[in-house]
Length: 252
Image (cartoon, rainbow, N blue to C red; front, side, top):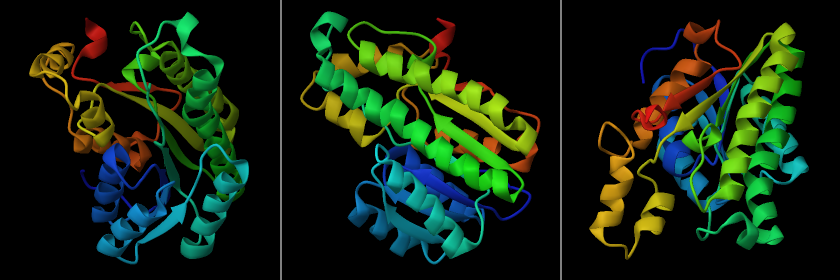
């Protein structure tokens, strides 16, 4: 993860698995205190038990405003302050559908988690950081935050929204010393991707690998390394940025 200049206190939403878990592990290994905020409390608690007293497991539904406010409150109560936040919680398409076939219920499900959830998290986190002298917020977007793919209109729209929200929040909170950035992962080896590939012929995986010029899918730890940099003092002049960590995906 690389050395950071001081011990910090942060929140990682969706922190019990996948990219979020990799972020939590790396940040704790670097000496930081982390609130593991996840809908799956049991899984978050297992991770917290493993990593020790520099962590706190909190159940959070990011689509519920009170949950976002509560996770910030608990972070401050337990660790005394909030220096950074990684808004990673998200969901994917259930099925590939043209826009006319998505259905409003599925559209709202994706927008509620992927965009509303980031909005509610940023709003709660920034208010706390504003009152305490600044901080760093990293939103996990996607390569689909700047490009598109057929059959994923709701997901693409939600992730484009995250990138736009990141830029707007960076402008809003720069005077308060709060940096807000987004990371755009390509495809990553997570349980979400594993579920998508389950039962599919190996050619489907090979096609996904081939979308990345480096010829493979990312490891969660590779995304976590970029997150660690953006929350660190070494990134003190970076705000409003979209950082692709995508194996060259958007260069095609």
